[in-house]
Length: 161
Image 1 (cartoon, helix red, strand yellow):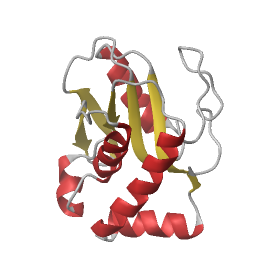
Image 2 (image 1 turned 45 degrees about the vertical axis):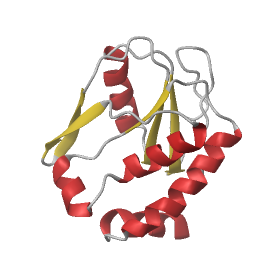
Image 3 (image 1 turned 120 degrees about the vertical axis):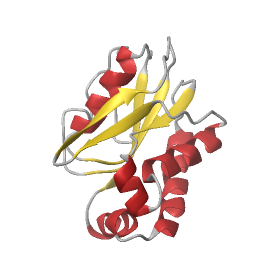
Image 4 (image 1 turned 135 degrees about the vertical axis):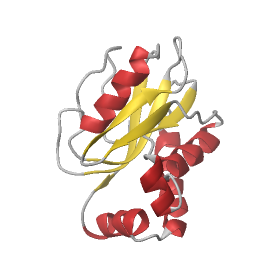
């Protein structure tokens, strides 16, 4: 949706790390409007969750705020499908919270940098039985292989999903 630089990067960093929790709702509303303009064919919305330690420090799971706003706008349920296990300096490990047989999902995150986290979470969702996965992000940093790449169902991903 947005390039992750300038005022967008400042807003996300301030909201994410500076404790400006009120900043997430306006950002979520913008993302929801962009997704609703070309809604994917999905059964539910989920998010790249934040590990408990960081969620407690920030006061909320920011990706959950984004996903719940998108889900509300689309008239779909928002499901907590993965848990993040904090491994200190190593990347979080994600585990499925439920089986998802054949569920087509919209995965929401705040910033897509390399795509590694989104790919890891998508792998967990697919191992839990999810069907087609679509990705929506508030901002993306640079170019990466997820943009323009065909998904398993042949659909082409763009920066918003």
